[in-house]
Length: 114
Image 1 (cartoon, rainbow, N blue to C red):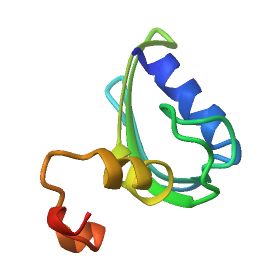
Image 2 (spheres, one colour):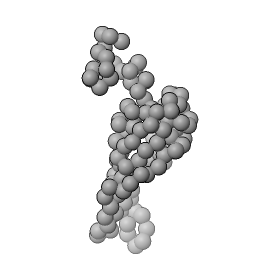
Image 3 (cartoon, one colour):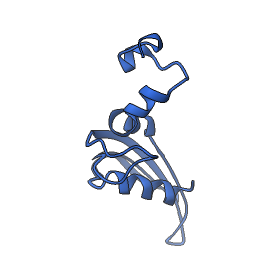
Image 4 (cartoon, rainbow, N blue to C red):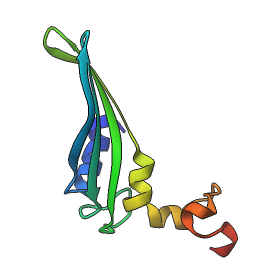
């Protein structure tokens, strides 16, 4: 899925999504960097098949934008998707469907207890 599709999925799932602070921002030699913290609740559409949980999440992201002649030439974004999924959206799916040895301290149970 491309960025626009991925972002629209998150926006539909976390309808109250907002940037709560810009942690760092700078511009130099045709590049702009933004590091920010966002938050939202899974209060909207299902996310990857998981019905809304109402749970809140907060995560960090970084965007790097290349600008030339006053126009955006490239855009790269990376965000802490696992934190968002684990804390608000995907907890139940991970617990019930993970077959990749999730750390028992993180989930609170071992594979044998499930």
